[in-house]
Image: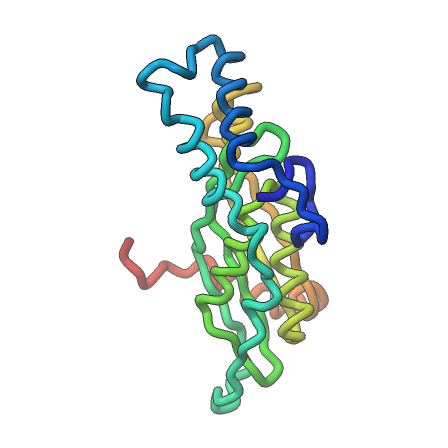
Length: 209
């Protein structure tokens, strides 16, 4: 896991992260600061559980999002229309309060001659989401990475999410969602292409959840 406050796309060359023992001790310090006793039965194993949870929450720092898109397929029978993956659920954490960000991402691109496996688009979302984030940067990172690696005619990323740093603390506004978008290439320059994307997003889903 990257040290808090770092926001680069990959781990630094000299990874001077604290040890697991030091991380668990930091959790004990926070438990004491909160007013509880980390040695009592109910909290005895909490530090190790928190560290394991952090490994899962922030495993995106260990993933290179660009490498996920390296394998593409050209046998598409001339397909040259929008590819859209809707409703990619993700879990992230606000870098300001370490509070959860829960939302859905819609990722679209207009291929030139090659396509990528759709699971890879979801994995790119997760690779960036499972880091300390702000939604605006998350949206741009996903779009820019797909655009740089696949070099399509255009990329569109739209994210809607709920931020618990706003719903469970501070202004306490449950039910509020935040929407961000990044439109690159023809999705930015061609209004017809953008309208087609919006129409696709507004269609009823064929999937049952």
